[in-house]
Image 1 (tube, rainbow, N blue to C red):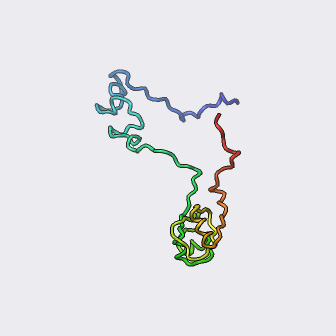
Image 2: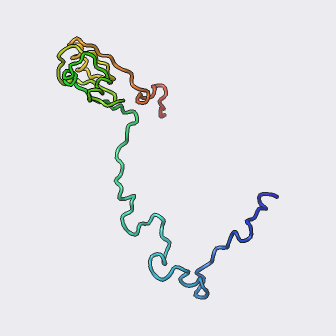
Length: 161
């Protein structure tokens, strides 16, 4: 037996009813569509919504794009560090004091002044924050970014020609 010799069992398939062939017989004239109305007169597209504004037109258009390489930092200012009164600051300490959330990348910003030397370990710092920290006698240690937020290596970028 070959593939082209296979047949459906008897009674499994029925022939499509042919309608709309004159006024005589059961399928004539209105051809089973009833009388009048939109559904009797023509085929209606599947996406037709009854004359109201279609959903594709109601939804506002998308503007711009989302940068997949954006790195979002939680800002922490120097005045917040001086209010803590600690000599050692890292992301875990900031989470414990409610200045950051667990897993956030922390960036030190230069608003305010420091009371004493502070050793800070953060992911990024502004130039003014770095200068103020070192002027107060503290040190700044930049932590590595997690792999998930690092942009791809320069050699692996696709170049258009």
